Image (tube, rainbow, N blue to C red):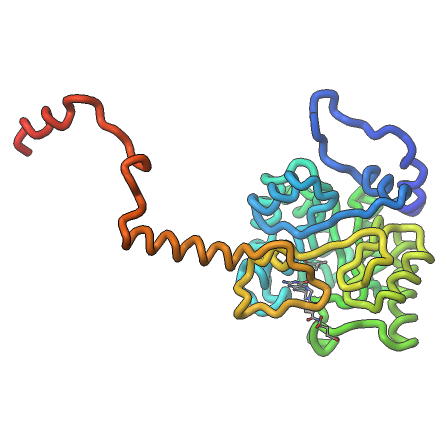
Length: 306
Ligand SMILES: Nc1nc(=O)c2c([nH]1)NC[C@@H]1CN(c3ccc(C(=O)N[C@@H](CCC(=O)O)C(=O)O)cc3)CN21
Ligand SMILES: CC(C)C(=O)C(=O)O
């Protein structure tokens, strides 16, 4: 049975929840139920304990530990440079910070391309050591499909990702709009259909024309999660560092699809500048930022003639 049919067969059943957990972790059933009720699925990336916790506090449906953290938080020039051990370290920190979102991790470049055996080994580590519930795989070429089926058969929910697949940016000629010709649009559509058949529970559509994303969404039975794919999809994802303005605006180019919801970096620098001038002007610390000593101690101390 494909994952779609599995999800659909259960989506109206009550989900199994711990009696005492006030806010249990979201499951595939919660994602499927939002999809079936036409409610937007919210997905945001998280890259550490704090951002993981922020997503929990905001009740975000899916927390994606995306390999874009290589660029936004580790300073690598692309996602392909990211060592797996460093990625896993970040996945673990997000899992410690977030107990309620459905956690999905990327399969980073170089950790799955030898296909089934290698992908199984990597996914087992992400589930066992990283604590994730699902895994996202870039690309929908026929050669990846048996691997996706295998991972599904092991009980690991797989999310597809087509359109602009950043791990292939060197072949794609950069971070460019995809699917803007009949040939490439048809290619993306075929990949999506094949991924659905292989049992993915959702598909990220990145940087493709709005109308194509709408067409895909209307013609498949799994949720589409857009990033630069317009409003006609089942959910959205943004990179937290982009949407909250966490990176230095002087060296980070924002894609057109990003909406800025805050300016962490700018506000952080302002805070640091104020701190520095407070020190210079003796406005910080003041007496109330310190501790009182017990009565008499200083007198006794002086008597010791140290
Ligand atoms: N911080 C960050 N945010 C992301 O969304 C992201 C990453 N990093 N790293 C991995 C990939 C790279 N991504 C990107 C990066 C840039 C564009 C971009 O600037 N696109 C052009 C389109 C140009 C065109 O073909 O017309 C744009 O102007 O929006 C798109 C996706 C998405 N992913
Ligand atoms: C941009 C999202 C979808 C991603 O794959 C990432 O953060 O790596």
